[in-house]
Image 1 (tube, one colour):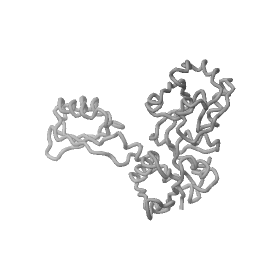
Image 2 (cartoon, helix red, strand yellow):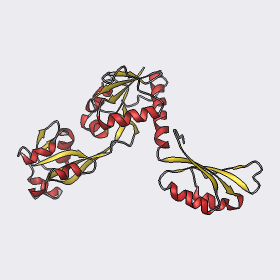
Image 3 (tube, helix red, strand yellow):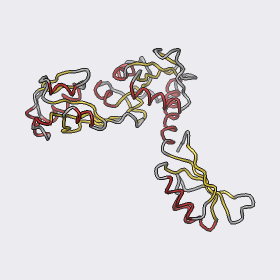
Image 4 (tube, one colour):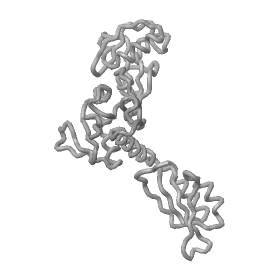
Length: 288
């Protein structure tokens, strides 16, 4: 069985489960609190804390895992990113109280104590800037640290910055950006052994779903004389597919994969060229 470490709670967990389900790997757990679950075939899920997944994978307890790039970087373990999954997007930033007078990187020289749950990344970044600091490790809610006097600034994750602003903090600089990644030990997907083969199959399944997201399959009947205009409206992956319509005469059918964003405009443009019978459907998987 290929063992896949998945986050056991939170948004990363929800989005990872949705992706695996869309890829045909339904989570079949005995209960909501189960620590393991079958994903069908030769795949088994292990449910652990997102921050522990880099260690599980690096130590071989799991063959691969889904977790944030920020957590992989903080772990310091040598892991290979197999797929950037795109969800869980966030930034690791330095933030200070609005009234602190710290508004730029140069001002951070006045900050001696930094509260964070990312001590490794924090110390490395401040060392690169040549700014000596004392790291104050916290396990969560770092935003409170400057207000109660245990730190001058914080290094914390944010997606929109709203939580920092609500707590009276100003973003100073971004240390790194992060998304969810499928990670494995270096070289784990290479070779002909069964685990490497299963890992490559998993990557193919997940990538096919990710490629399909944000795309739609469009079909329409159009006047043959309008094909030049249709090609401009429907560039598709390699241009639209054109097929004959039985007894169509001057009408042909076109098929194309198009971006979901702005599909309303695509339909309007097609109608202006005389297209009829326009059908738009979702795509479950898309391979290059």
